[in-house]
Length: 326
Image (cartoon, rainbow, N blue to C red; front, side):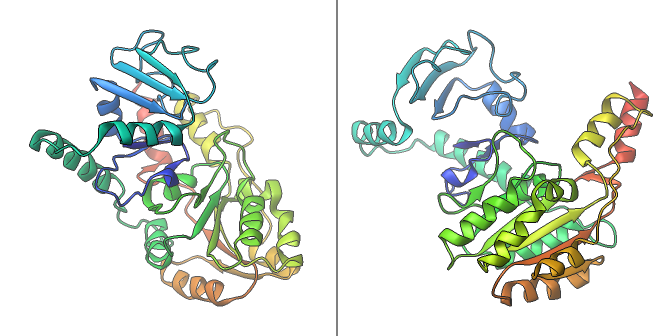
């Protein structure tokens, strides 16, 4: 079972049948499994650009795989892919019917081995890399991951920073991942305020890039007004990282309008009435994180990270070397 883009909380990520998520930065091994599968069941998903790796994993209009598409809107079925079987039904109702009809059946050793291999590849892909730089995001995520409750609500907007959230955190409970499928920036903080208001007894953590946060950072005022219990992690690399990545990859030497002049995010948070801390070294994050967790109300931690690390395992220099070799 693979989750579609930013729907990882629809299935327990610690379940032995979980194979990972089909979204931005998909595990190449999972992508190959989808592309070369015999049968593919699309359950409640359009399987659009993000899930299909820009429509590369399934042929259009006639897929190479046997395709079963279950979706509540009949107009969606067959609009892009011609399925072998299309069923217009809500996902929950379809699952209930399938489970009733299937009954209890023994799993063959070959199928079990295949499932184990899929899950092992997910485990390897979601293992945090070695830390890089004075402030290593790998170290930050290790600390956060170890202290999140199973029902913690994680929110984010759009940007390269979100790869750390999607790839390396485990989602255990339904509706613990609030993130924009549309890819809109600035979504994370308003979503976190709403989540904290509706579920005041649960952990709420918002991740935002510096550019992403500046889209709706003023919602800290709303958080303070209602004393929403949440923590904001601002990953500050001084640029629009995703756009810069595409510029470096596709237009080497032609960087334009991606550098940012940022405020002091911790001071800005304090001016609203939140607690605010700036972290520049990995070893200082634990203390700032503990303080945020113990504070009743909104907190913000600004992480000043190395702008050269454009993705978890890729630097700007890596992109330039690839671009120069083409």
